[in-house]
Image 1 (cartoon, helix red, strand yellow):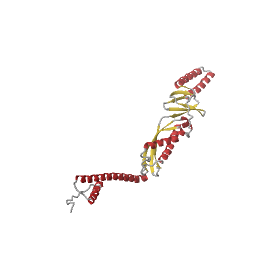
Image 2: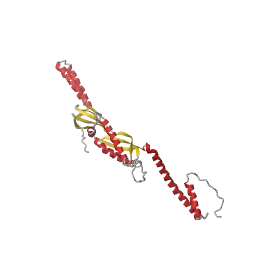
Image 3: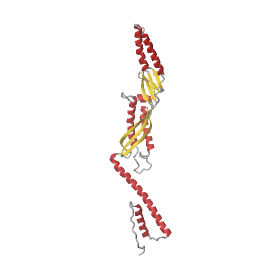
Image 4: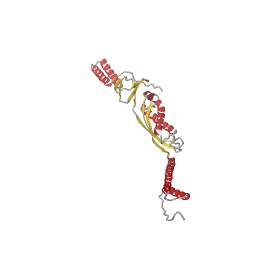
Length: 299
């Protein structure tokens, strides 16, 4: 969307010079009043009444990363971005708009992820005003200051964007889609998606999102315990698979070693029994209780 923001090209002078001239004029009018003539008193009083508001209502001070939107009887005349102390036409209405970066902490909201699981998700973002024209005239301030209206607009749109992005991804890959992007594992990509969604929504208000990050992510209370047990079960299964894989390797190594060194000759039945016993010992949760057999292998 094309911007209508432009630099203020109107007349402006140093505020200190304007103050000096104002004080000098007031002193002049006081001196005229001292003539005590009817015309001089009237002229002096009128001069003082006009000088004071003309000087003081025209003074503007602009700090770094701050702007003033200049409006002349309802017509936008540009944005004053120069830093310093100035005097401008007192008939200009000015709106102070900082362009500094601001933080917004989005409180966790309850939404459904891509697979329908209720989750709690929150985010933090850094934003600033990029287009002072849009920020001033394209969003309704409802009698509030421009920045108050902009902050409220960012808050509402951020909540909506967060809900939309959360619904585009699953919480994690419990469905065993290893390559799928999830809220839990692909933080950078999800954050970039959230940032892009926010920028598309806030562009109408002349606001730019510098960074957006998910800072809170959890299952909703009603399914948290169930999902915790599911995660525990997945972890146990993965651990068991590793244990069995190691146990089989160890049994194979033991059989090969016995056969190579000729320590004992085992028939297939004895090998099967030995494999069974070793797997039970290696895969058991508790320590094995050995039983010493003093007999022989042959009857």
